[in-house]
Length: 279
Image (tube, rainbow, N blue to C red; front, side, top):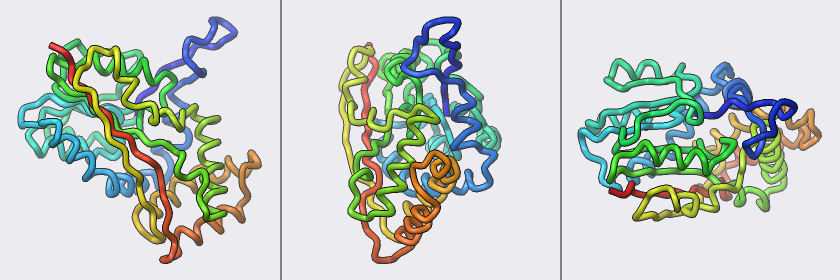
């Protein structure tokens, strides 16, 4: 995951839409120090990877392409890209789960997308997934990413939107999902509906052939999506309860719903957008 370091408003007026330092993400909700974090990331990979791979195929991924994977998480996308013969660079604020990829020819970097550059024209593909919505200025991030593409290179973004979970007919699921959304917005600064603006943020960034698709992630009791949500929710449970956004009883009731074979609902909406760097 990538981020920027903020400057206190008492010294300079804030230049981002909210004040940030990387510890808010790296050491907070999604900290690698949490014992279940790698399991949580593996579950997320299991429900998202096939769509990600198909998106690369449709955009023309070939052996020898230079690919930047920003916010590499558990490393499955970078590993798959290397298996396709791409020259892969993967970045994150915490590379604990990525370092082993160096043995497979992947360049692993601890990197901040706002403060650390790559030379213009460095990559044939740049990809993010569930990254940009957490950043203090998504438009600035998109502009920087686009600037690192070579002419003809492709920027590929996959970002979630939270609106499907806010009005679920399942009361406990609805309550804790709203609590989780509110916690992300206040504690991390996540813009939980930014993805709905795609592909507009790609415009004016030197890109052409801009397009997008959108889909709903489905969730059923006991499936991988439900297991991912339980681990994700549990990592915010203490803070959400302390803030009065939900109760422990709400969380326990939601977990019963998520484990019920008869439970079916929507999870997040996922927007995928792409554009090609102009010659």
